[in-house]
Image (cartoon, rainbow, N blue to C red; front, top):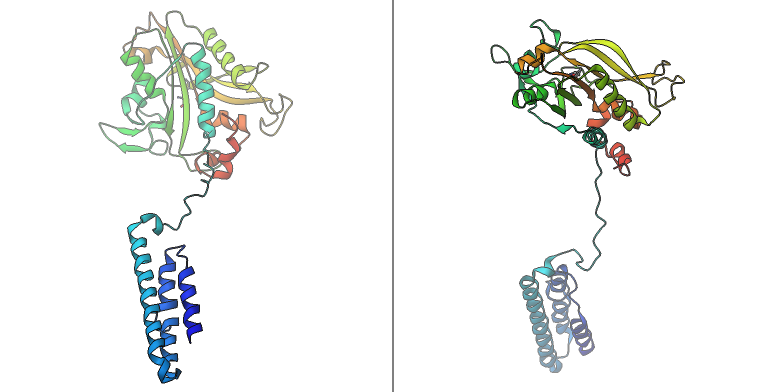
Length: 340
Ligand code: PHE
């Protein structure tokens, strides 16, 4: 009997409370109804009568020791919040996961930087626009298809028409209304069109439009500015070509192609074996548009252009599904980590 008591006594003395669960484990092991000390009391029955008293006292003392150890451990546990933590505070911290720029942000910045170099400022405006800034001031006739529900997301129809802007030309109207020429500005931003989402179209995308108004601005200035832009973005050997086109707010208007950067104009499925890739629309600002914003069209002339950031990103990064840009798939986004 004495041996057993001594054995438990040794266990008590060497017990180490390492984690908060150990306090309860200790209680169960020594003081619980099936614990070791209860077991000793059961054995007391078989102890000869003359030894019963001594053994009983030893077991009582053992029990008291176990109880005071248990109480002390419990107190220690509640008074120190650190002991409640399961985490090992000495462990080294995990690596911080660095994010990366979105491919559209990378391209947007590249384009903006090109135009900043040649003196363009940056202007921004609201994404929710009124009819005047998105359509009327830009010479859109009342029956123009863009004014149809099928192409534009309207918020309010009727007299005070409000819609999500369909292009950032609306920002340029705001700039023309609020400042005097010379004006040289680009307006980057998100635009919305009521299109079914597919690999080649989305209901929102990003544009960068440019506007230059001063005395004597000519089509040659437009062409040279765009050539500079194309060569900065796609490389010094890039050529451009202009094809006649139509926009309500420019006259004459053109669509601009760059020589295919992928096959170097030899012909591939991206340029559909033409050697050329369409990248933007442009033209000389229609005098009606200047007048609508209070600019004297006899004194001033200007050019404007507009491009889709997704289109330029598509060509630079060879991404052929527009939806990738807004799906937030980390497997896609992580590929642009090294491109800053
Ligand atoms: N606003 C036109 C568009 O959204 C682009 C453009 C801008 C064309 C300026 C010509 C001049 O398609």
